[in-house]
Length: 313
Image (cartoon, rainbow, N blue to C red; front, side, top):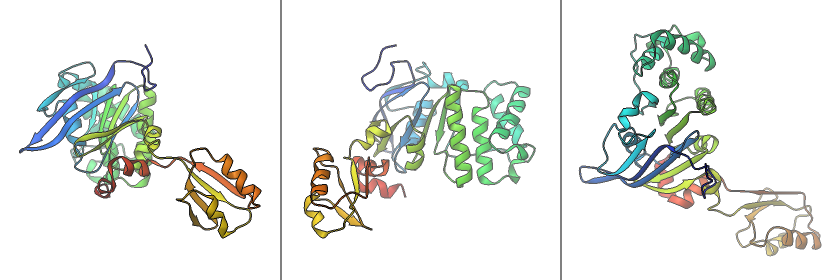
């Protein structure tokens, strides 16, 4: 395998698409999206509600057909042919309420060709690993919303698919079940699966994604790693002087702000060292200094604007 320019090894992608377009009633919902999801990574679609994430996922899976463009799923240009090799958690959840939890998981595996006995055994193991072993024999109707959602997710991985596609998997989950879900996603990647998920919550994308695409208005506005996204903004310095003095401001960059005894400003182009020399020479000293790359939140605003951020609230 040869190295690609973006630093990832060149390999056949788990999912790829070129120029995907989808219109509904004359309105373009997805407008020329390109996708390349390398095998073995956690890849996120990050964007506000209505950005086109769900429609894109459904086209990639073959649930709906694109008006324009081409796509490949696990090496097939007809995605439905690979359906047994995909674990899919749709945005609209649904389980049979009268089924026991472990049977619901086994049933979802059977729909993908897994033997019933194998599915039930794996279901019990998966529920135990996810901290739900006590609920294996409970009927779905007796489970909390968060527990039922995790059961459906376990049903989408019980047949050990090489590709897992999750549409807004964290929606409606409490913090405890969100943490369980994150651990499950990481375990699936460690197993060797490729995970593609959509979300409008930046914290999940920042913690989980090896790579992500920021989607807004039906277009990909950014593609790369979280660090690549952060690189759209300069690093920030947080400086606490040993001796406070209002004249310090004159030495700092124009955007310097003062709060709780510290100064916050954009790292100068020439680096921090020349500035520190001036501050020390003037006798202000250094009680604290840290340099940080802005978070994904700030990078998202720079890439797509405040309006898109409001739509994610």
